[in-house]
Image (cartoon, rainbow, N blue to C red; front, side):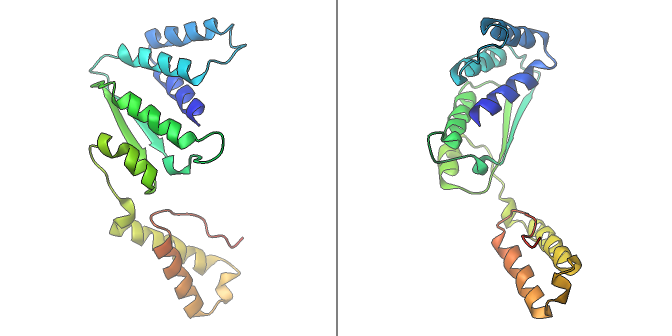
Length: 176
Protein backbone atom coordinates (compact mmCIF):
# COMPACT_ATOMS: atom_id res chain seq x y z
CA UNK A 1 0.00 0.00 0.00
CA UNK A 2 1.05 3.61 -0.42
CA UNK A 3 0.92 4.16 3.33
CA UNK A 4 3.00 1.05 3.96
CA UNK A 5 5.59 2.07 1.37
CA UNK A 6 5.88 5.62 2.72
CA UNK A 7 6.16 4.38 6.31
CA UNK A 8 8.78 1.81 5.35
CA UNK A 9 10.86 4.36 3.45
CA UNK A 10 10.71 6.85 6.32
CA UNK A 11 11.82 4.27 8.85
CA UNK A 12 14.67 3.05 6.66
CA UNK A 13 15.95 6.54 5.89
CA UNK A 14 15.84 7.43 9.57
CA UNK A 15 17.61 4.34 10.91
CA UNK A 16 21.14 5.65 10.36
CA UNK A 17 20.73 9.39 10.16
CA UNK A 18 20.16 11.49 13.28
CA UNK A 19 18.84 14.51 11.36
CA UNK A 20 16.29 12.39 9.50
CA UNK A 21 15.33 10.67 12.73
CA UNK A 22 14.67 14.03 14.39
CA UNK A 23 12.35 14.99 11.51
CA UNK A 24 10.39 11.78 11.89
CA UNK A 25 10.35 12.19 15.65
CA UNK A 26 8.90 15.71 15.23
CA UNK A 27 6.17 14.26 12.99
CA UNK A 28 5.40 11.72 15.72
CA UNK A 29 5.18 14.49 18.31
CA UNK A 30 2.97 16.60 16.01
CA UNK A 31 0.51 13.72 15.98
CA UNK A 32 0.27 13.49 19.78
CA UNK A 33 2.81 10.76 20.30
CA UNK A 34 1.29 8.51 17.69
CA UNK A 35 -2.31 8.83 18.90
CA UNK A 36 -3.28 10.20 15.51
CA UNK A 37 -2.06 8.85 12.20
CA UNK A 38 -0.63 11.30 9.66
CA UNK A 39 -2.19 11.02 6.22
CA UNK A 40 -0.20 10.00 3.14
CA UNK A 41 0.35 13.63 2.08
CA UNK A 42 1.99 14.42 5.43
CA UNK A 43 4.15 11.27 5.23
CA UNK A 44 5.21 12.23 1.69
CA UNK A 45 6.12 15.76 2.78
CA UNK A 46 8.24 14.33 5.59
CA UNK A 47 9.97 11.95 3.16
CA UNK A 48 10.68 14.77 0.71
CA UNK A 49 12.11 16.89 3.55
CA UNK A 50 14.38 14.03 4.58
CA UNK A 51 15.53 13.44 1.00
CA UNK A 52 16.23 17.15 0.54
CA UNK A 53 18.94 17.10 3.21
CA UNK A 54 20.58 13.82 2.22
CA UNK A 55 24.21 14.44 1.28
CA UNK A 56 24.82 13.83 -2.44
CA UNK A 57 27.65 11.40 -1.75
CA UNK A 58 25.31 9.13 0.24
CA UNK A 59 23.51 7.20 -2.48
CA UNK A 60 20.03 5.98 -1.56
CA UNK A 61 18.44 3.06 -3.35
CA UNK A 62 14.69 2.54 -3.31
CA UNK A 63 13.86 -1.01 -4.34
CA UNK A 64 10.23 -1.89 -4.99
CA UNK A 65 9.36 -5.49 -5.74
CA UNK A 66 6.01 -6.80 -6.96
CA UNK A 67 4.54 -3.50 -8.14
CA UNK A 68 2.21 -5.50 -10.40
CA UNK A 69 0.73 -7.15 -7.29
CA UNK A 70 -0.71 -3.88 -5.97
CA UNK A 71 -4.46 -3.40 -6.14
CA UNK A 72 -5.83 -1.68 -9.24
CA UNK A 73 -9.52 -1.79 -8.42
CA UNK A 74 -11.99 -0.68 -5.81
CA UNK A 75 -11.93 2.35 -3.57
CA UNK A 76 -8.23 1.98 -2.95
CA UNK A 77 -6.27 1.83 -6.18
CA UNK A 78 -2.86 1.40 -4.60
CA UNK A 79 -0.89 0.81 -7.78
CA UNK A 80 -1.81 4.19 -9.26
CA UNK A 81 -0.95 5.93 -6.00
CA UNK A 82 2.43 4.20 -5.81
CA UNK A 83 3.17 5.01 -9.45
CA UNK A 84 2.40 8.67 -8.68
CA UNK A 85 4.71 8.52 -5.66
CA UNK A 86 7.55 7.12 -7.77
CA UNK A 87 7.01 9.86 -10.34
CA UNK A 88 7.05 12.57 -7.66
CA UNK A 89 10.25 11.21 -6.12
CA UNK A 90 11.98 10.92 -9.51
CA UNK A 91 10.95 14.48 -10.35
CA UNK A 92 12.80 15.71 -7.25
CA UNK A 93 15.93 15.22 -9.37
CA UNK A 94 17.82 14.16 -6.28
CA UNK A 95 21.28 13.09 -7.54
CA UNK A 96 21.75 10.63 -4.67
CA UNK A 97 18.45 8.80 -5.21
CA UNK A 98 18.23 5.62 -7.32
CA UNK A 99 15.28 3.33 -8.07
CA UNK A 100 15.02 -0.35 -8.90
CA UNK A 101 11.48 -1.55 -9.56
CA UNK A 102 10.54 -5.17 -10.14
CA UNK A 103 7.27 -6.06 -11.80
CA UNK A 104 5.72 -8.30 -14.35
CA UNK A 105 4.82 -6.49 -17.54
CA UNK A 106 1.61 -4.49 -17.11
CA UNK A 107 0.39 -1.76 -19.45
CA UNK A 108 -0.35 0.84 -16.76
CA UNK A 109 3.04 0.36 -15.11
CA UNK A 110 4.92 0.63 -18.40
CA UNK A 111 2.86 3.66 -19.39
CA UNK A 112 3.48 5.47 -16.10
CA UNK A 113 7.18 4.68 -15.83
CA UNK A 114 8.27 4.76 -19.49
CA UNK A 115 9.43 8.38 -19.44
CA UNK A 116 11.19 7.88 -16.10
CA UNK A 117 13.14 4.72 -16.96
CA UNK A 118 16.84 4.68 -17.58
CA UNK A 119 17.09 0.96 -18.28
CA UNK A 120 14.76 -2.03 -18.32
CA UNK A 121 15.60 -5.70 -18.17
CA UNK A 122 13.04 -8.33 -19.17
CA UNK A 123 14.01 -11.36 -17.10
CA UNK A 124 11.23 -13.50 -18.49
CA UNK A 125 12.97 -13.33 -21.87
CA UNK A 126 16.29 -14.53 -20.49
CA UNK A 127 17.38 -18.08 -21.30
CA UNK A 128 18.72 -18.54 -17.78
CA UNK A 129 15.36 -17.64 -16.28
CA UNK A 130 13.54 -20.16 -18.49
CA UNK A 131 16.07 -22.84 -17.63
CA UNK A 132 15.72 -22.15 -13.91
CA UNK A 133 11.97 -22.27 -14.25
CA UNK A 134 12.07 -25.59 -16.09
CA UNK A 135 14.47 -27.07 -13.52
CA UNK A 136 12.17 -26.04 -10.68
CA UNK A 137 9.00 -27.38 -12.32
CA UNK A 138 10.74 -30.61 -13.37
CA UNK A 139 11.96 -31.15 -9.80
CA UNK A 140 8.45 -30.64 -8.42
CA UNK A 141 6.91 -33.03 -10.95
CA UNK A 142 9.61 -35.68 -10.39
CA UNK A 143 9.53 -35.59 -6.59
CA UNK A 144 5.85 -35.10 -5.73
CA UNK A 145 4.37 -38.40 -4.53
CA UNK A 146 1.11 -37.93 -6.44
CA UNK A 147 2.81 -36.94 -9.69
CA UNK A 148 5.25 -39.87 -9.67
CA UNK A 149 2.37 -42.06 -10.87
CA UNK A 150 1.65 -39.84 -13.88
CA UNK A 151 2.42 -41.01 -17.39
CA UNK A 152 5.66 -39.65 -18.88
CA UNK A 153 3.81 -37.64 -21.53
CA UNK A 154 1.57 -36.00 -18.88
CA UNK A 155 4.65 -35.02 -16.89
CA UNK A 156 6.31 -33.65 -20.03
CA UNK A 157 3.20 -31.62 -20.99
CA UNK A 158 2.90 -30.24 -17.47
CA UNK A 159 6.53 -29.15 -17.40
CA UNK A 160 6.33 -27.53 -20.84
CA UNK A 161 3.02 -25.78 -20.16
CA UNK A 162 3.99 -24.39 -16.77
CA UNK A 163 7.41 -23.27 -17.99
CA UNK A 164 5.97 -21.43 -20.99
CA UNK A 165 2.97 -19.92 -19.20
CA UNK A 166 4.86 -18.74 -16.12
CA UNK A 167 6.09 -15.63 -17.99
CA UNK A 168 9.11 -15.23 -15.73
CA UNK A 169 7.18 -15.83 -12.53
CA UNK A 170 8.24 -18.82 -10.46
CA UNK A 171 5.35 -20.02 -8.33
CA UNK A 172 4.77 -23.21 -6.34
CA UNK A 173 2.77 -25.79 -8.23
CA UNK A 174 -0.89 -25.94 -7.15
CA UNK A 175 -0.97 -29.69 -6.52
CA UNK A 176 -1.08 -29.84 -2.74
